[in-house]
Length: 407
Ligand SMILES: *[C@@H]1O[C@H](CO)[C@@H](O)[C@H](O)[C@H]1NC(C)=O
Ligand SMILES: *[C@@H]1O[C@H](CO)[C@@H](O)[C@H](O)[C@H]1NC(C)=O
Ligand SMILES: *[C@@H]1O[C@H](CO)[C@@H](O)[C@H](O)[C@H]1NC(C)=O
Image 1 (cartoon, rainbow, N blue to C red):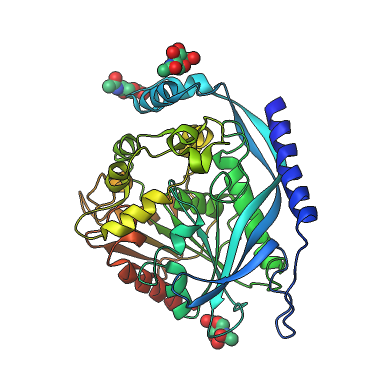
Image 2: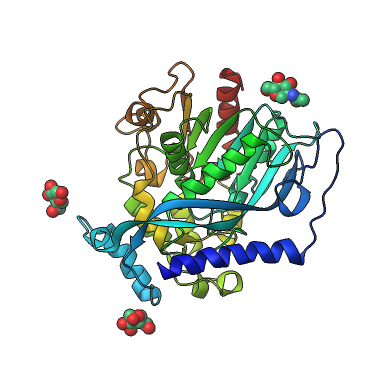
């Protein structure tokens, strides 16, 4: 309990420091209001391909969630971190039973590094719709605006007239990094996403009151998007779940290939101040194994993804399985998009025994809009589908799904 309070206070003090140490400059645009409103330390910058203009900064989010008290200290060092993951993956493991304790309220205020991007050609966000982009394990929000216009979802969305909102999940990128055991867990991640969506709909971000929000996730970000549709069924008008299915036999191989180790000793230049419970992929080959399929990717993109690798916490490891659940109250359309050779969600073959994308709606969405829902399998791509040569085919499919549903 004590550590939760410390983490919550630490989160608040970061925000206070930001608010007072750097004066916030607000750019005024008479026709569209203050685009920097809602952000601290906001800057305006182009997307990697220049087709979108983005406001990026820290959004302070006050949230409360029923996390799990984890009876887990440390890990003391790499040896113990590795042992934890191995025991977690053991057949009929009892480790979660030993570790996962009672539900415990965690509340606080945390900084979420966020990026609102709109088509440069239009000069302002389109208030009719924002796509809410949630990244997965091993990345931060830059997964959606990566490397060049050929790969950037944000650029391709802007070219199709769409406004996007991406963010670094708690504990990644430039967002707050609280206690990785008790605080950075799936229930709190869901609560933070809900608060962000609420702000987008109320006009608290970029002076734009968005009337529709479509959730777009990748991997753990799709699990989180599913959790939003289940717990807050009115938050999203539609859900696009990429790098996701309900066939999870490959998760064990996925975590093995990540070979997670404490980030502070693996990459001290970026993570020296983080506690040992923040873990990171051990190698470039591990990143390839988990996210890519050759020859459908450019080696420089793998290298860039490896250099930009982000952390995953012990708290997320133990609470990850609580993300996904049926969403009977969600009535919007869903779109399931997977790489043909996705490792964690298809054990590298999404067409065996049948199309795994097609199974999702029946398993989780009994009341989704059937006529509006779609699936797509991206040929030859691995789990990190946005980072493959043919990523644009998946994007064009998603934008077609959105247009087909009137967005
Ligand atoms: C790692 O920590 C464990 C538990 O404290 C200890 O037994 C072990 O000797 C440590 N290993 C190394 C290499 O320091
Ligand atoms: C694991 O536990 C289940 C029951 O929960 C049991 O049916 C199964 O046989 C066990 N598997 C092994 C390999 O022992
Ligand atoms: C905003 O999006 C809606 C729906 O796609 C479209 O009809 C409208 O023309 C767009 N407005 C602007 C200013 O681009």
